[in-house]
Length: 232
Length: 255
Image 1 (cartoon, rainbow over the protein chains, first blue to last red):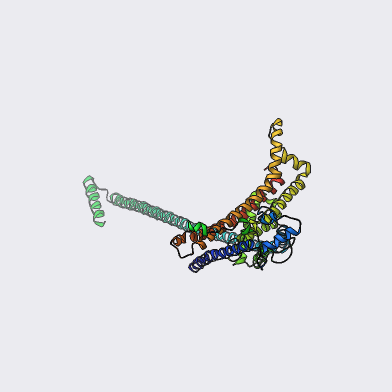
Image 2 (spheres, chains in turn blue, green; image 1 turned 135 degrees about the vertical axis):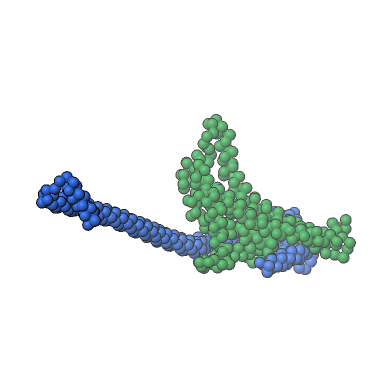
């Protein structure tokens, strides 16, 4: 960029210096022509003199020689060559220049478009893969949550079952124990009753065997009871 | 006022009228014709070097493609729409031929804009006149084109007595004339400016006290040299743009 600026500055300077030099040369030429125009008797024939001779030959007057060419009127050769030049440019651009450049530009545009399309399809593909991965990840998460939940539920139900089982067992054991106690108690009462009955029968037998008076009976019963009590 | 006495400014005809180098009056080759030749060669070079079709454009390819883009997007699409894209070669030719013939105004040694002669602007203006009228007749038919050109819609009928002659003069006479004069006068004026300051600069290159003023016209020459680069581009652009406007207007009278 710096080099470009330096070159531009140099170019402008050269242009500016050559401009005046050239113009000066042109002016000198013009002055020279002017001198030649003034010096009709000179040996060297200038362009203006040639034009003047030509005009005089064509039947013009000397006044025509003094007239400067009108800068507004077109010159035939310039029109012809200008038209030829323009049509050459037009023909060249129409047939070769423009189609070639346009072809290059269209090829680039196509390339860029196809690259963009490819990038777009790759992007959408990548997005699809990403969404698939995300879906899979979400599935895995919900699956793991489900498994954990199931495990928790099964653990809960197992705990509940075990607790219920334990309570049932305890209740059974209590019931059995109570039943056993009850039966033991009933048995004991029955045994006691039998014993008492036996004792009573035995006492009655002794009473019947002796036919005692009241005092003897009472003493007998008391001794029996005390015997029984001491036996126990 | 010794300086004014010493200063001999060449007449306008001397700074634009160039003698034939070869050939006669009708097909003689002078400096202006050489400028045409350079313009043809340079345009061809731009497009030959610019048509490499590389994926990443460099150098002249950038110039050629930018020019095509500029003419298509900046001129044709703005003035003629999508249908005008087939005019691209013509518009490119107009732009490049005018620009290169203009830019020789500041190319050392040559320093002559071919458009400072009336011949080229006149030819191009007439060609544009023929083409936009032809395009109008082709797209609307002769009657339709004349109707849309001379009888603009939405005007009360009595006013056509006034409007139609104005439209006729404006569309068929003033347009080519203004195209021609704009290009010619701008370039001639620029050329005269450059010559004026160059002559002043060289006249001040003397051993005298007034040589202290030498830098002033020198800087003016530098400034106007840069300015004429802009003018060269701008006049090529304006001519091409107006050609696009006229052709587009003839093809689509509604717009």
